Amino acid sequence: MTPFDPASRAMLQHFLASIAYRTQKALRGAPESFGDFRAAHHVRTPYELLWHMTGVIGYARTFLRGGDFAPPRLGSLALEIERFHATLEGLRDDFVDPSLRASITDIQFLHGPLSDTMTHAGQLAMLRRMAGSPVPSENFIYAAVTSANVGAAQPEPVAPDGWWRPNQAPQPPGPITEVPEES
Image: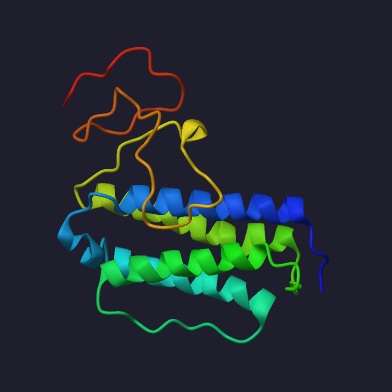
């Protein structure tokens, strides 16, 4: 059992809120058909990816609560979004409960299930572009992420990239000094 470290747990809670923010950014405004989009054979659909993300976060909770977590398939992407955020909320609340002693370290939470889930949030954004509905870019440093908000109701971007256009290719890293021509 690892000791309870309030500062470390606060960081993990904030990371969960970042996962919620980026997941909703990838899902917000998606076409109705997005949940069933399959990029290639044996590639998870967005629905299947979010279902997996729910499973990963639920699995993380077992290191605090014991037991197993295997979420059954739900009937729609909307229901899975709701369950995903409820599962994030459960883990967020578990992280502040000093009576729960984890069987892994906070670092293992971070580099294991939490980083895995964040990777999948990025995959959702990539699938949006592949499905013909790209997600606008933004400077995440200024995102209105708060540890208390792991729900689906995430704020709009605070610092969206003004040069972004849905019909242009992604830009190289670094500062954009002028608005690229639309192609």
